[in-house]
Amino acid sequence: MIALYDKIGLNYANLRRPDPRIGQRIEEALGDARTVLNVGAGAGSYEPTNRQVTAVEPSAEMIQQRPQSTASVIQGFAESLPFDDDAFDASMAVLTIHHWSDQARGVREMRRVTRGKLVFLTYDPSFSGFWLADYIPELVTLDEGQMPKLTDYEEWLGSVEISKVPIPHDCSDGFLSAYWRRPAAYLDDRVRAAMSSFWALGDVSQQLARLAVDLENGKWAHRYSHLIDLQEHDCGYRLVATA
Image: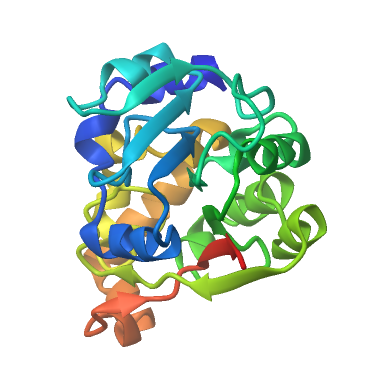
């Protein structure tokens, strides 16, 4: 995954700009924590600016793309956090746990070094309904293989609060479902390059060609007309926080 994100990271900071509406949800979940650990921090998206943040990220390319901030940055892994027990008030992990080599161990490490709340932005692999999977069904298999089940968090952490995170139609963070109302974006090589799913799937040119045809002939607009006027949409993203 380090090698993968060294490739994705080449344009990551520009295409994966944190969306303030999603950021607000994460901020609220962190409560009154003063010190926050961001695990799998990437280029620093969603790190609170009004708290003392320590970021852990394995990819040097991602670290280099971080904007200037007061956060302390360490190159390292979720599965082996270089901190003492109870070192932080809260910990967060945003759209990253599916890349960890040992998810249970990474979560246990977060619990070990955190006095208070753990907050995860993740995806529910049991969710169905994102239209892109109608064109690329391999996405479903991929998510089922790499995304932890929501019940896994309860097994690892005990009682957790799980809430839906609807995605705004103009979401600025270019993760996989961010363009649910802007389907032509998935035809852009540059946009897909910032999505790890497309790197994992490999060649999906035939599937994308079918999408291009349906956008041109109006079939997509007819089939998914119920999406056109929505301001936000549930695409399967969930906020998981310890109670």
